[in-house]
Length: 359
Image (cartoon, one colour):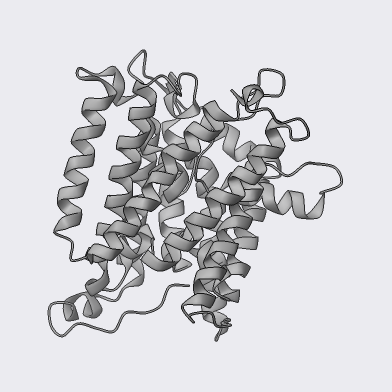
């Protein structure tokens, strides 16, 4: 469709860069205002878990419905997508999801949340993300690639049933059922209507990303990858571009990361929430960096982060994405159990403790 838009000086990959930046700008604004983060829903303070889960589930419901509606219209197709591979790399996904979940608890934020916090002036988040990107790139193409290859070689054949869309009822029915269940839970979560409305807008960015890169910007002579919101490979690409921009061009992911930081910065400045923050103790530094390294390794093995494999991946209805999100959730719960003293969990039944800030 890109050839029909009439651009003469802009190629499809260049347009994808600007599209990613625009998508990231809106995501950064909305994520900053809604405090969008799955880590808070799993391992946040007891009083904030419910509202945080409501925000995340609302975004997921809209992403599911919008993405599968676009599939039904024939605008996009996930046939051949890695989340719908016939051979499921279950060991890599399980191990990666668990590592990512534990890592986001250690770092006090998932990759998308840390990107937003970076825009607010949080130097802890930026430091963690730089290590996260280095480890992710090492897992994709560097010294950790043999580990990724070895774990990824352990697969289970799925045959023709690689997604829920292959089951009776089809994609729209399954997406609708999951979306309705998610919305029902969100409405009982204690989240404010304003937060849920912002989350719904945020969720709509997922099908917009899939349709934009998978249909509108597709050019037969200069094709681009079909992508949506994600923060694992995109951070690795952004770091690589930053140190080798004369050799490689910027892509959708680079624009997405830059736009997200810019959107969060704009929101933080407008609402007077920008402030410089850094590490306070060596123990905090070590814990955060360990979390970033685990997320970098785990995000690649699992096929994405809470956004790439979760918010954007689950709407594909691929079994790989479902397994990845479940493993990330299990890792988050495990990390919470390992890092939270039993006395703190017991105290949650009494007076509500003060919520600790992310990152």
